[in-house]
Amino acid sequence: MKRDTRNGLVCQNATRRSFLAAFGLTAASGLTGRRATAASTDSFRFEITRSDEDWRSILSDDEFRILRRGGTELPGSSPLWTERRDGDYCCKGCDLLIYRGAWRVPVEKGWVFFAHSEENTVLTGIDGPVAEYGMPEDSNTTMIEAHCRRCASHLGHILLVEGRILHCINGTSLTFRPV
Ligand SMILES: [Zn+2]
Image: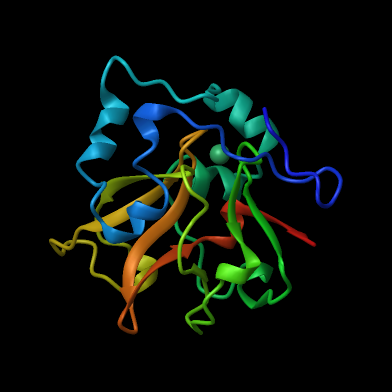
């Protein structure tokens, strides 16, 4: 495993796997939604898998609800949403480096917004309406869901926000390390 050592013990960089090379930055275009279904084929396995019991032993109840059950934090509830320092944002489930502070977009909606992810770190899926975004639960809205490529943890969604396609991420799903 190649590691980024700019700041001592920091996030683990992505490993490259040819069959996933199309993910990452291109996920922001929404073009990978169909490919994300590859996650359910026999040939695909996430690098890190744990039982629910093991996940609960390393995550708080709220973290488990969001990372492992696809929940969404209430807007403004994560201290990371106002974080403006440069630094690394890593998956809380497996420590994979996914976002960098330089890619933050200052959208004042209460979540953590990025212009894009690190290459080869995000897989996408299809999700239903999100009540925390103000969407009626019985609406037919579909969302592009963002998962960690390595451990499948739910990160957030990829949305059209103020005219830009952005990653709208739960701060709860990330660990921030300033550089
Ligand atoms: Zn992860």
